[in-house]
Amino acid sequence: MNRRPSRLLQVIGDRRHTSLSSKGDLSIAPIGVFFFSQWEQQDHYLRIQLASSFVDQVAQTTINGSAGQVEVLPEFRARNPEIEQISLMLLSEIQNGGMAGQLYVESLTTVLAVSLLRHSATQPCITPYLGGLSQFQLLQVTDYIHDRLADEIQLADLAELLGLSQFHFSRLFKQSVGVPPYQYLLQQRVERAKQLLKMTDQSIMEIALRCGFSSHSHLGKWFRHFVGMTPKAFRSEQG
Image (cartoon, helix red, strand yellow):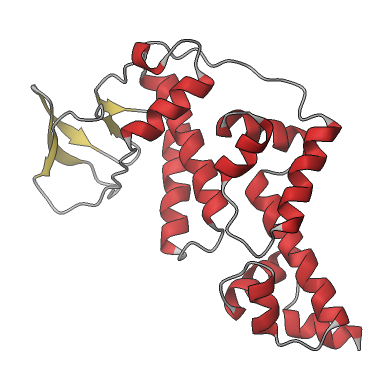
């Protein structure tokens, strides 16, 4: 939104609300409820819609009680820095063309759903999981990732492997490894690329595809991020 507040009319269901709206204001509308917004001047806003089946799944696996007992309540001009930050991270990923990958987007949307349920649900009681993954669980997951680096790995697949919700799996994985699953996947793809650059004469494009990157530039972005140089420069240094 613009820095200068703008006058905003909103309708959620049978409720109407008119006020000045500024950057950071959130409106929350339950799934299936009519939602309408109208500004008196030109402005920009981010609208995120979560599928009811997805929210129900998150509720069932992270909240004490069944999804049917949880109701997201409508709100006008709410404030929640966590929801705002996650939303902006999703927007940035879209604007960057999905460079971080599907696992990153799935992780963000899962945390967004949990944050929404915490903030605006009638029963926002999140079941705690502590202590990280066991060594056996960690080996299961890392072996699965290493065997499928060229594939599109989904957060749901990793969580299902251990019988955990996506939200709790992500938290326990980060407690155990120190980084979230999407970042670990990117690191391992870059490590595989380094091995292939050292040991083969395959083109950088071929190596990118073998390591799960969509293009030469996609590999280059993350290779520079983790290694500090381009794949071509790294190969040249191996001499």
